[in-house]
Amino acid sequence: MFETLESPTSQGELFTSPDADEARAFFAQKSRAMTDKRMSVSEAVSRFVHDGDYFASGGFGGVRIATAVLHEIVRQRKTGLGLSGHTATHDFQILAAGKCFDRCDIAYVVGLERRGLSPNARRYLESGAVRMTEWSNATLGWRYKAAAMGVPFLPARSVLGTDTFKHSAAKEIICPFTGQKLLAIPALFPDVGVVHVHRADVYGNAQVDGISVADYDVARACKRLIVTTERIVSTDQIRENPCQTFIPYWLVDAVCEVRYGSYPGNMPYEYFSDEEHLAEWLEAEKEESRLRVFMDKYVYGTRNFTEYLALKGGEVRMQALRELEPLKRR
Image (tube, rainbow, N blue to C red):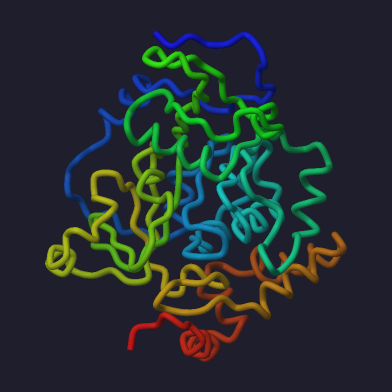
């Protein structure tokens, strides 16, 4: 047995159960049938994202985020969500604008990297409306890994002796083999998550070009999983390069084809981020009244992601962003 230490202790709240057996019981009842899972983003959010759920957003920063699903969560006015802030930048900004979550595991939020801080996200956290527990990017990512492995925690040395540990929900333990002090990082099993990919078939076999960051583990940790994809391809095409299929169909509950689905974020090899529109977001957030007008125009006043793209120039704008993508396929 691992020995836990009485002192020092962490102060953070554990928002989800790390019970691997409980999660396995849920996964055991999921169908493994190869069924056509195509549906609209609106239907996927309505069916699989419920008020009070703990939600995981795939991608990393402003790269390969599932913007269409995030907009739809706001549009459908989902509330009381828990949120994983694993380098959540524009995705965090969107959900904060909709006041969709009231608790958050935080590694990196509020900041949009070199673009600056989100005024509204900062206001929202400072308002006291959100309960927060802190992690590092590594430890929050390893929480997904523990879940993907089907174990209740993973041992590590990261953040020991720091204020991040004090405000986390991790525990100090003694290694039964060496007697060394380690950190027990609890597994994270989100109720629902979304990952945006380059291509998928109708069953949910999904592939990405380039680095997958934590999404391999996110997909295996989430109890329900929505996949949005730049394009739906045949299963034969998926099988031509099976080693790229990092999300297999049996993990997936919904497949939504959303061309340019990471906009205004970056989609590696496809299109660059729309820095002008991200700056427009930040400017609108400086005053709550201006943000309400902004959200009414771009999210609440649009029926879907296609209408949102049309407001920002549609295909013409996207082609310009495709030309800016330094990694684009020739």
